[in-house]
Amino acid sequence: MAIAIFPKQVRTWRPGPIVQLLLALTLVLLVALAIIGPARLIAQIEGDRGIAAIAASEDVQVNGIEVNVTGGSGKDARLKGWKLAQRLAWAKLKGPKMSDERIDAMVAAIVVEKEHIGPRRYVATLGVIFDRTKAGQFISAASGSGPHSAPMLVVPVLMSGGVRQVFEVRGPWQRAWAEYQMADSPIDYVRPSGSGGESLVLNAGQPGRRSRIWWRSVLDQFEAADVLIPIARLERQWPGGPVSGTFTTRYGPDNKFLSSFTLNAKDEASVPNMLAEAIRRMDLVYRDALAGGLLKPDPTLASDQNAFDRVMGDLRRSLLGASASGSAADQSSGPAAGPEQTATGPEQAMVATYSVQFASPDAAAVDVALGAIRGVPGVRSAATTSIAIGGTSVMRVTMIGSLDALAGSLRAQGWQVSAGSNAIRISR
Picture 1 (cartoon, rainbow, N blue to C red):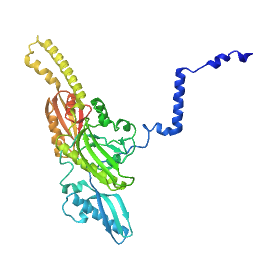
Picture 2: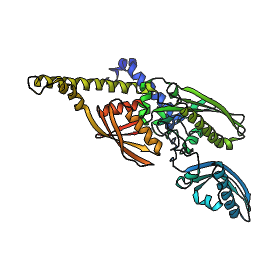
Picture 3: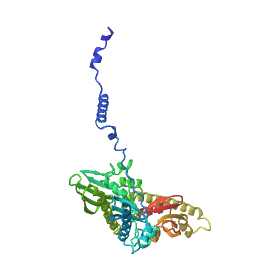
Picture 4: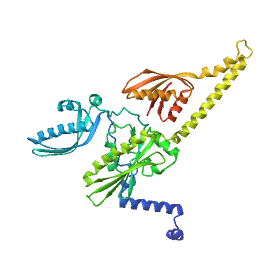
């Protein structure tokens, strides 16, 4: 008898819309887990995708030296090949004629890009690294002889197989930029590794964005002043066959065009060499753009910061003016009060001395930093107190204004500024 009490309620029960939605989502998740596995569902935030950039040393590196020599044994042929690579690399740098012993004394390392060792033959592609302290005096094209750019964030976009990517997966274009030696370039390249959340921030769609607020937040994350966008489009004729590459250099938050060129690789194994040559040519394009005044930080990227600095400066001046006028009113009945004292009171209150640290790889960098500081409104004097060529120098600045005003003016000129206690550090 008890079993027949609630049969109607049991037969007519139906899940509500919320329960139906939860059941449907659970079913979809279970199907996705069964078909593609859980690893792919979290691939956008995890995965082994980062390639750290090599340290940009101050040494001079020459890559792509091909040798093909024979000897009494494989070891002897290899030694001869290295000696030949050193001579060819020195000639490529247009160094003066020297003996093999003197050239060998300036070599810091030999980089083996590719080699084949036989019983009596050595075929290889090598790179030669010269110690700058020893070889720099003989090389006319020293890296510190010209103006340097502000820090430039590199977003290498690869277009291959109908897919656009930056750091979503490990690609040959990202690896080429990470492994290329940038020490001799006047362009200050900021090369992200692409690990962790960087692959979500810097993706193939980022160069198409125009929001200055978004770009400013991205550049601040990597301590850069502007952005460079080198694009590589690879087209393969057939698997394992020739590869054609079209390379385009762009820059700035508006993705402005600079130049484009085409290179070819005979097979897949030659693609890394083609990409390295493309980066070398792109670096030359960016050098010419820097010399032509194009690679200056976009002023619109710092407009918000400049507006904030202006507001703070107006507020500071109004507060100082109010306090000065109040002091003048209090002293107006005294015999010492006068128009000259009230006029110079605010100015004297704003005069301050600050310490500025800056990188000084050569004497020209010292002149550039002094010129930038002396060009800031309100600066009365700027003089170096410590000069370290190849290191960090220090100058003392006396100005009418605050440290924040000095930092804001330097940021507007494209400098990267780090503020401390009564001191700032600037760099480009």
